[in-house]
Length: 174
Image (cartoon, rainbow, N blue to C red; front, top):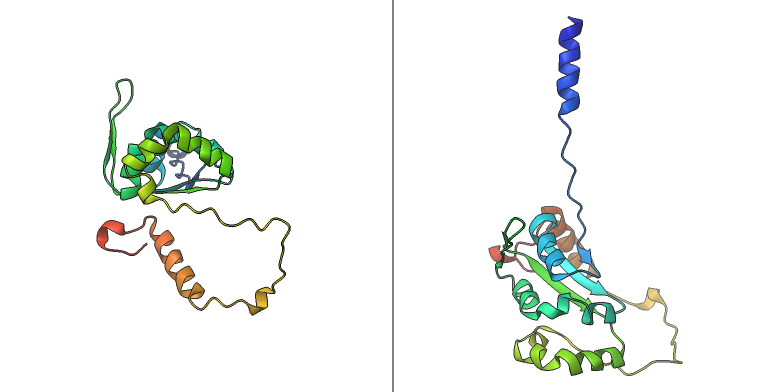
């Protein structure tokens, strides 16, 4: 009887549960390879985001603008490897949110601006250069602000995130 229990305990201890996948959706200083692997293996939606945009605009990821375009569009990305397993990223979504100082963006335009325009990268971007408010800090009360659709937006976003993926291919609204 004891040997039977010991055998069951031993078998139980050998069956370790799989580590759950991290639900990270925000990438910061990521290589093109890391972005593709993340969208294939970790989560099918991600954002390449930085409040120090020079980190992204001068990084390796922007060296692969066509790849970023494909992922932004939701197209299939085939990754072939010689020394590792090849894979295909399907139905993934990638967004970029790059906050950058004017001079850093100007330097990016000098280096890669023509390619970014010609291959449609800039067509997928909302670029703005707001007037400086340096030295101005108007005080407004949050109580006076109204956001009539905020609750509907938050509810829908919670539904989509609880599904684990955004159903863009199924006609869903992102």
